[in-house]
Image 1 (cartoon, helix red, strand yellow):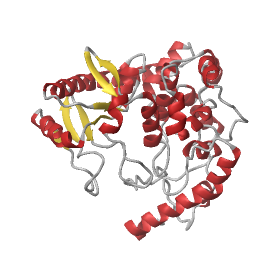
Image 2 (cartoon, rainbow, N blue to C red):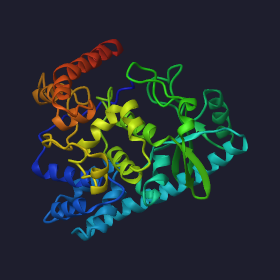
Image 3 (tube, rainbow, N blue to C red):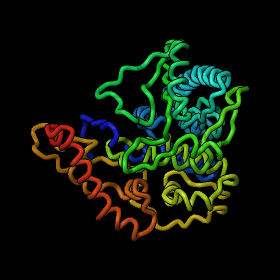
Length: 394
């Protein structure tokens, strides 16, 4: 199991106004707009008033720059103060990514001089590969995948360049973890973090090992400024995004729409180059969830025609995240049990369940709801009991 990130808040009923905020954010979860998205954005923002919540939630989802970009591109109505606040987020993330780009080019050049191959992962690659501007893709870290035999050498080289090991909160990284201790350096008032991976995934039963040697033959190139870099092949990248951000065992981690944006934007930008036969054979879960994203942010007609997605009746609660335990406490205030959290734990939103368990069809949804989800909850319960019994109910 990954380290738990427990929230000290509880889930509350979601108002229609709050649901509208999530709908607007969902429509903005993509690099490029299309006519269907633009029309719906204009309709949703007409007479919309809860701009403060929209701005706060856009940061939570890592979508601040994209929200500004799409609302500006579609000429959606915005109050002046909301426009200024969203533009400030856009400019702040653009500057931060410019600094990260500088660091990434330095790292790429350093490793090239030492003849050390690497693959750039996640946002640090996607920002340059599929987004119109790198600043539109919010980032936290620069993630690199290297051979196990090269990992410690790169870590040492970076430390000579001024990076320092971040003191991890909580338990130290276990032996054999899929990345070395996080490195950080202060540049222009920003903390730039780098993670050196020797595997895509942690070593648990939920994941199969994917190391550099397994992935490098299908790598694709992209430019960081005028420096050439490599990242995962498109099918492997779609799998990595899904498993890293959405699939089991991440019950304790919130769903952030920036990862939906990555999936949608990669498919929209590269649907002609993606090997769909290989994706379906090797990573069928990804193909199962792609139609579900249409209800959040509609696919373009070109993608719909290419993939012939079967769109059934829209699932309930589109865009709503898991609000049960262990993400939220089972006890609130003077109550011994918060029954709303219990309800959300046992019966999460249908859309989330389909996305999380890749349950596209009716039979798959039945297994997810009545078999896989209960088993998964018992696994988390066992994990808590082993780790610290006093954290089970607070």
